[in-house]
Amino acid sequence: MKKADSEFIKGRIAPCGLHCGKCFAFADGDISYHSNELKRSLGNFDVYAQRFVAMLDEPVFAKYPDFKEFLDHLSVATCQGCRKEKCKLFKTCNVRACSEEKQVDFCFQCSQFPCENTGFDEHLYKRFVTINRRMQEIGVEKYYEEVRNIPRY
Ligand code: SF4
Ligand code: SF4
Image (cartoon, rainbow, N blue to C red):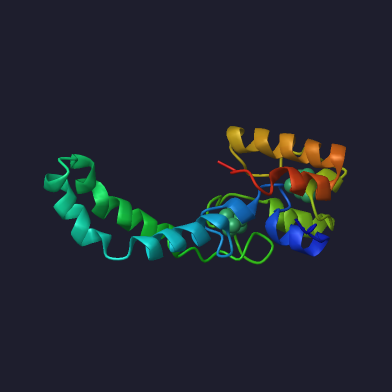
């Protein structure tokens, strides 16, 4: 597989280290892509799901409308990533603006890391520290290779 260049990586890994490329809200992400593919493969499954409830005696097919609604939601992801727009998930995040002010691409490059300025809750803060320590240890490109094919959830 072709190695990603640093600008591509910056478009996918936010300054805090989270992988935007694997976020459900990322327009060019795997989740959105596969949701659209699954929608295409399912076609007019709505009609069949109703029939399958009785025909196959499998009540799980009655849940299809909720599944479809959620799949539709995942398939219309619009976020361009943290460096291009405000994060839709973490409304209290201070990291992007702060990293621009400090002129660093990633927080581990900042002299104040790990700081108390992120605006993250405890769970996210722990991830932020772990991810940035890992990037510091092996470098951004190797870190991206480690996470490019695994879910972030
Ligand atoms: S900026 Fe936030 S909402 Fe957008 S892709 Fe990154 S983590 Fe997801
Ligand atoms: S002060 Fe904290 S949030 Fe801001 S760039 Fe440095 S490490 Fe990141």
